[in-house]
Every structure is written in C-alpha cells, then in structure tokens.
Image (cartoon, rainbow, N blue to C red):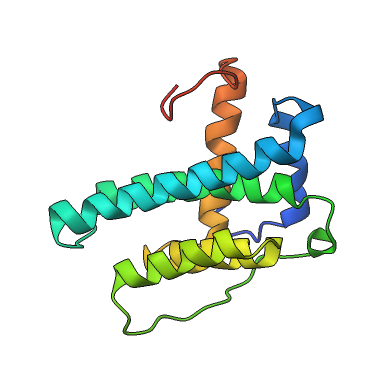
Length: 166
C-alpha cells in the first residue's frame, strides 16, 4: 500500500494509470473487458461462497485481503470498459452507501448481481465501494491496491501471463 491513503484519488488519474499498464488486443477491447469484468466478479463470488461454506460466513483478515485484491481487479476492468464515459469527467471518489442489517452474504450477492445487470460505470464502482466498505475498506484503498499490484508487475515485466500472484 502506498503512503497516499489519506489523499483523495481522482478516477481520471486512475483511468490514465490503467491505460498505461493495459496489455490486451485493442481490436477485441470491449469483448476482452466484458469477459474480464465478469471473470473477476466470479472470482469474488467464489471467495465469498467458500467463506459461507467453510467458515459460516465469518470473514477473517486473510479472506478480507483476498476479496479486496479481487475487487481491485474488478475496478481495473470497470474503469477500462467505461473510460470514455462522462462519469470520469472531474469525478472524485465518494462514499455511496451505508450499511444495513442484511446478512453479508446476501449483501455481496445483491451487489454482484447489480454489477452484472447494470452496464454503467457508476453502478459498478458504487457496488465495489459498497462491498469494500463491508470489509472495512474503501474504493480508494482498493484502487491504490490495484495500482501498487500493477506497478509491481510492470516493473517485473509480468503484466502478461496469468495467476494472481505472478
């Protein structure tokens, strides 16, 4: 994590960063980004499912970190997919949701469904922010986590390839 966690992160800055580290075929851009976002949302769903099955819905620090890590990939795909839309014009991240008494598994499922159903960046980013808050985080922390991870991969020349921990 960078030492900038107290600063507000502008989505335009993050979008520009995403473009800088993007490595994929431009002729298939939208298909690639659609499939990538769906895949990352599926990874979040899989992690949550295992916590519900194996740990009675109790999320420890390890599960929290893994889920935030996957949220960061969801952010990258969402921002790349919607990079040219008006939502990125002078947009600063803010808090969108407050908690409720709904069980965490249902909150996550509802948010994942909303991300898959709605095809606009504000909805996807709002849902990621909401989910991050469920894990005592924020979308800013998730975006910074993603930037740190991708900068590290870029420096080690491993943006290509597969695997979360490459």
